[in-house]
Length: 194
Image (cartoon, rainbow, N blue to C red; front, side, top):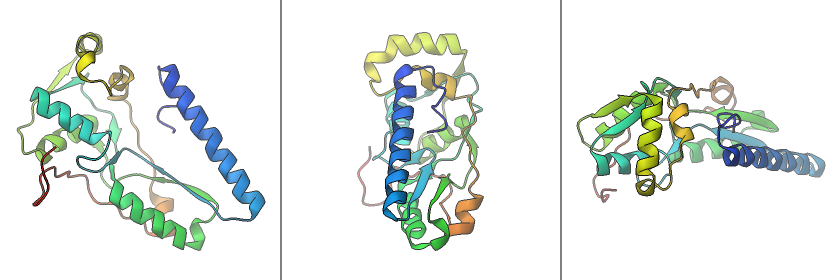
C-alpha cells in the first residue's frame, strides 16, 4: 500500500486508496465489536510459479532469455515467500502482542531490483542476462512489446530504481517473524517447470 501511493498511474493510486479505506473500515468494525485485529502488510510476495510478481518476471525471462531493466535497477526490495506469510499470519493471530497493530512483514533479504532479477535467473537455472537501458528507451520498448506482456504496466520502470523496504523489527519482536532468504527455486524435485 505504501509503495504505490504516489504511482504515476491513476488506477494504481485509486486501488491503494480503496484498499486503505477498506482497511480503515475493517479496523473500525472490529474495534466497535470488541474483536482484536492485526494487519500484516507484506512486501513483494512470491511463490514460485503461483504469484503475479516474481513468477511474472520468471516467465518473461524464459520468453526473452534476458531481462531489460529501466536504468540500473538499484531500488531495494525485500521479497517474501507466500508460505512464510501464511506462517506469520498464524503466529500473529496467536500472539497477544500483535492484537490491534499494523505490521510490515518484509522478506529477510534486502536486495537491489537487479539482484532480485539475478536470483530469479538463478532459480530458473539460466545464466544471468540483465540489460540496463535508459528509462526513455525502456518505456519505448515497453509500448512496442505491450501486447506480449499484458500484466505489466509502464509505472514498473520508475519503481525499478525506487527503494521499497520496511522495518521487520516489530514483527520479529511481537510474533517471531522469520521469513526465508530470497533464493527462488522454480524447479524443485517433483514440480513441473513454469
